[in-house]
Length: 206
Image (cartoon, rainbow, N blue to C red; front, top):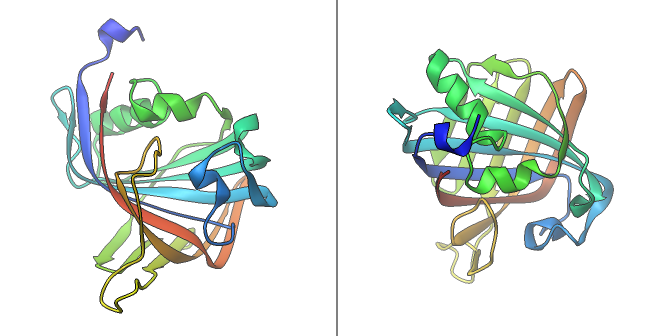
């Protein structure tokens, strides 16, 4: 697909993540920093509040991107897998696959340069809940995650990072702890109170 054949697209919504690093994952600040363990395993979860790929709407869809990377993520050779929302139609699934595998420009094209292996894409039924400080998402029998925001200096506020450059996150990153489980073909994830972050994103391309 050439750049000229890629439609204009945009997306806005919620992005949250959890990996096996201690708080805060060093790679969230820079891919050139060593992560906590020899392998960094985690996910990015996306809830599209609004968006369109050309004339294909993306509103209301969810996606999970699982990843397994070297300790220094900048070295590349990542393994990734997509879980796509079963409520998406064929055109929407193709649009999401194109965007998130870097084929439509925007921030995911930058991250795609580090991916060496894509595992089989799965279409699943998501159960997503946004309860303010707590975000949770489950896929029955396959994947479950729950992240909870860290309190700020005021118990009613959340601890945040501001003005930190990050390819896919929005400008305000809310710090959290994550609890996740996933066992899938070629991939496994188990975390307990480790690095988690969420933000409101805004992307576009190509």
